[in-house]
Image (cartoon, rainbow, N blue to C red; front, side, top):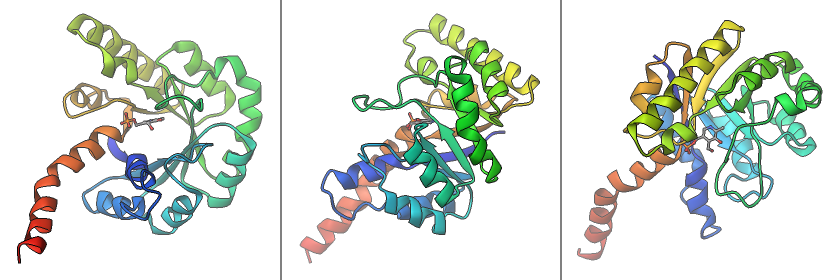
Length: 238
Ligand code: PXP
C-alpha cells in the first residue's frame, strides 16, 4: 500500500486571496499529520502565488513526517532547498501563466543540465524526485541524471472522459512504474487524483507514495462547511 503525502498549497491559495493570515497551511499540515498523512508537500512557486518563504521555514520546524518541496530547477530554488533541507525535493516544470503544473519535466531533453543541477542537492542528503510523464525515455533519463525517485504524472489519466481512454492511460502508468522500479528508481505518483480515481493507482505494487492536494482540500472545505456555519450561527444567535 502506498503512503499518502498531502499537498497543502491550496490552503495557502485561500489565504492569499485576502493576503491575510488564515487559513494557515502550517495548521493544515499539523491536522493532516494527525489524520495519518505520511508526508506534507508544498510547491514554492517563483511568483509565490500560494506558499510563501516563511511557510516553508515554519513547516520545516513543524512537520514531523516528511517534507517534500516541489520546485522549478532554478538557482533561487536550489539555494532555498539547500538552506531549508526538506527530506525531498521534487523538480517540476513551471510556467507563470499555468493554473497548475501542466506536464511532466523534460528530463530527456536536459539530462546533463539536470544532473549537474541536482548533484549538490543529493550531496546534501536530500532525496531528489523528477515529476515526469509516464514515458520510457523520461524514466531512463531520470535514472541517468541521478534522481533517486520519479513521480509519475497521473493528470492525463485523471482527466480521461471514458473507459477506453482511462484504461489506456492506466496501462501507461502501470508500465512506467514497472520500468522505473526495474531500473532501481523509487516510484511515486500524483496529480488530479481524487476520491473516485485513486484506488486503481494505489493498487499498483511499484508505487510507494501518492501525492494528493486539490481533491483533499476541496473535500475538506465542504465536509467542514456544516460545522463552520453552525459555529458562526451559534455566535450570532446567542
Ligand atoms: N504532484 C505534483 C508534482 C504536483 O505539482 C501536484 C500539484 O501541485 C500534485 C502532485 C498534486 O496534484 P493535485 O493537487 O491535483 O492533487
